[in-house]
Amino acid sequence: MTTALLLLPDFALILLGVAIRRWMGLGDHFWNGVEKLVYFILFPALLINAIVRTRLDLLAAIPLLATAFAAMAAGMLLAALPRLLSSLPPLTFASMFQCGYRFNSYIALAVAGMLFGAPGIATMGLIVGAAVPVANLVSVWMLARHGNSGLWREVARNPLIWGTATGFLLNLAGFIPPAPVQAFLGRLADASIALGLIAVGAALRLESTPGVRGFALWLVAVKLGALPLVAILVGQWLGLSGLHLQVVVLFAALPTASSAYILAMRMGGDGRSVAWLISATTLGAMLSLPLWAAWLGRGA
Image (tube, rainbow, N blue to C red; front, side):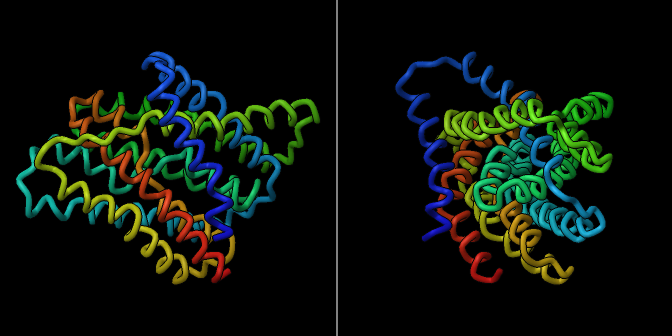
């Protein structure tokens, strides 16, 4: 119950985003602007601010990253299994496939910060920074429309990767920002969580393409149930415990990334079904994430 109460403010912000979108009449242009502000400015500031202020042990992070990648690989394999038994159009399958392993960075950093503070954000930031390019590579490859040059350009421009890399370089160099710079980054970091979660709520959709509901429900079960179990088993096998194990399991239990919809639409895929999956996993995570967090807390 305590863990659920800790996460309640974050999920309340998602529901607030739903209400604002429904009743305030703000158009797509407004929400696109909010998402760009959070994605390109506020979230990189959050990552830099948290990583610079946290003592890091990169050698100890190897099992952490191995566990995160194992969970993502399990998501890819489990998402591909129904393809052997179904007759979904290839582009519909490729669009929905990415929802089995992609993750919502906004919720990731918000939950890590709420439960574990700056060390949690830094740990989650390391996972996110390493996992984002892999997720993008596999997703674009499956959709099979863009060439490698466009793909690498997209990965190179990803602000979460650059924010993570900048934070780690400054941390390893022993740089301590002056007080005014820390305050500036702190203000941006505070704004990032609220605006990011409100934007998640505003993007929720509950309509899917007819004939894909079975595959969609399977992906929801994979994302919210199977992957956290994989992370627990692999993490414990690799010797993870404490903060690292808790954060990587929560990473595995995250809902699907909102950017999966953008990629599917940009590459001519089934954006409607992807939007349903993003919404279903986000709403489901309001129940499952507190349960996973509470279970991990008892074992810590």
